[in-house]
Length: 445
Ligand SMILES: *[C@@H]1O[C@H](CO)[C@@H](O)[C@H](O)[C@H]1NC(C)=O
Ligand SMILES: *[C@@H]1O[C@H](CO)[C@@H](O)[C@H](O)[C@H]1NC(C)=O
Ligand SMILES: *[C@@H]1O[C@H](CO)[C@@H](O)[C@H](O)[C@H]1NC(C)=O
Ligand SMILES: *[C@@H]1O[C@H](CO)[C@@H](O)[C@H](O)[C@H]1NC(C)=O
Ligand SMILES: *[C@@H]1O[C@H](CO)[C@@H](O)[C@H](O)[C@H]1NC(C)=O
Image (cartoon, rainbow, N blue to C red):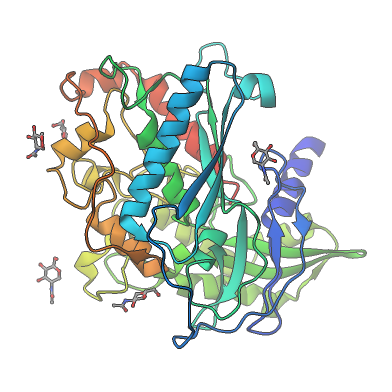
């Protein structure tokens, strides 16, 4: 009992990233210094930044392809493997710079090392749960949107928005850590991919997109293991005499979520849940008091309804800002039941998009399939691995998408032929490993 309580509290502390600004132009940020000990957050000074202004003069875009910078650290002795990993990170970065025009460079702290030796993150004996790694924004910043609602933006995105002044940035925008113990296939390997290997670039690229902000905030922060209801990220302050609960904050990604088929914005549900602050006040003796109050409130029914939607096929979509035609909404992954933190919601619907040019952000990447294989079966989209719908999403969040894609390299199509159901079922363990990856890292946003 004591242990589970501690777990809940540390999760609350970790998710308590930002304090609601009193003024609409103030922001306050916290760093996530170490994502294995994410509750050790460091408050940093907040600054005022002006609202988005179209008339700002900006330093000219430089297109020298150095706008997605990878600072690579290799923690193992195998120089050849290190070199392959470094190249893989760089190629994934080049795919991104071929797709997005960055106003200010995005800088990635990329490392490749043995998780078991270095972080004591060891796989169980049957090897099914090896953590592959992942990428997350190193810092999220709360900004007031044009609809008056405060939402979290990843630092990489804040750098792209046309502000007159920027807040102090962390040296790195994205933190990416990958486990050298995983059986990866690397572009350029002499042998074709084997059925139990996963393409390194494919998984790096997927994780980089999460690092750029393709992440929903909706989770059960009070019970990750057995979700009962979903909310955006709870925000609270520690007070000497207890805690102050300041409301639940969505990510910028969540602003564009709609219910299908009605088209109602999910943000409206967040607003309804947040009425608890006015109704019950902000002050609580302990986090548990807050949780008890919340769970018995009428607002909690909205949370439960959200969980129901997030576990029912075709019930949530992302409506890009260049359309209000609901049939152009991008269907999100809501088929998993029970809800799976990190896999549900923050991905493209697997069945709808698995064989399309928008394969990249489905929650399963099959082993034995290279990035080139996925591109080939889905019709060789001229815009590259970042498909047309994913481009719309990134553009809606505020990234500037290039019109023309110039491929930095030609991804290999394997000689294996495309993996079939047989390969998949014989590699169930591997799929679990991919889930684990995504779970571990998305919780940390
Ligand atoms: C970059 O990542 C490495 C490896 O995880 C870590 O040791 C280092 O502190 C990080 N650097 C910064 C500035 O966060
Ligand atoms: C909405 O989008 C669908 C699918 O793209 C299309 O078939 C339909 O004609 C569009 N409807 C309108 C009113 O534009
Ligand atoms: C995708 O393609 C594979 C291989 O051709 C096929 O087995 C599978 O049924 C397809 N899935 C969908 C949802 O179309
Ligand atoms: C994509 O290109 C590859 C090789 O260039 C070709 O073998 C494959 O048939 C193409 N895929 C489709 C669906 O046209
Ligand atoms: C969509 O949003 C982006 C980012 O805010 C903006 O640059 C773009 O002009 C918007 N597009 C439309 C069609 O409103």
